[in-house]
Image (tube, rainbow, N blue to C red; front, side):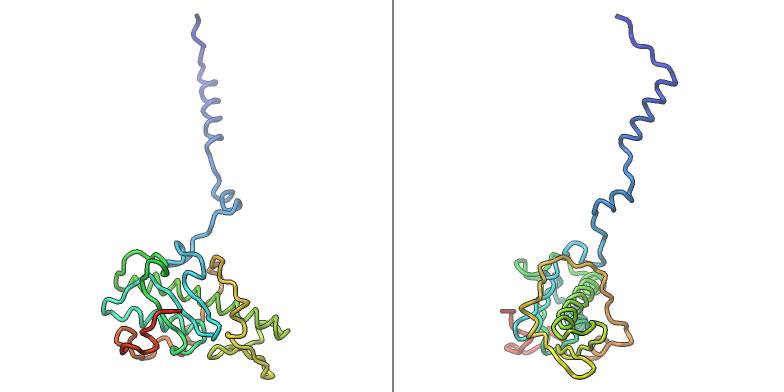
Length: 213
């Protein structure tokens, strides 16, 4: 039996064929639907309902995988959520680190809790607020951009109103966050940056010491 003759030209042609067979264009992968990375803990916990729920009373329950270790983390996250939802703090309950309910955020580590969980809550709550505004716009037959929101009430310039409570049953949070809804500018903040009693120092039996329904 004669061994096949392999020339340099034949070898390089074969090598070129292998390179073409195993090269993937990153742009092509994105075009095929590869999920874009989301900021903070939102990337590994993409479902909006993992972070927030709006009850029939228009109040919100927000969830975090971080725990309070005496650093005031839960209070800061509570303020962030209330700010982006345009709800008073009294109407937002924060629920912390329950393995059955909370998003999996790994360990609690100082300032990274605000960077990761705070970013996720900020974007998720901003997106939910935007969804509520869109529902209100459809109900009131006005452009979403013409509406204002305060204390869970969405209003038109001529004082037509609809509340979060009225829209809660239409709100579908069983979907992934997009991370594309812009949160408030710092100049518009009314809750974040203000002094408020800490969640972890609330008296037993207070509204901030109850589990969500």
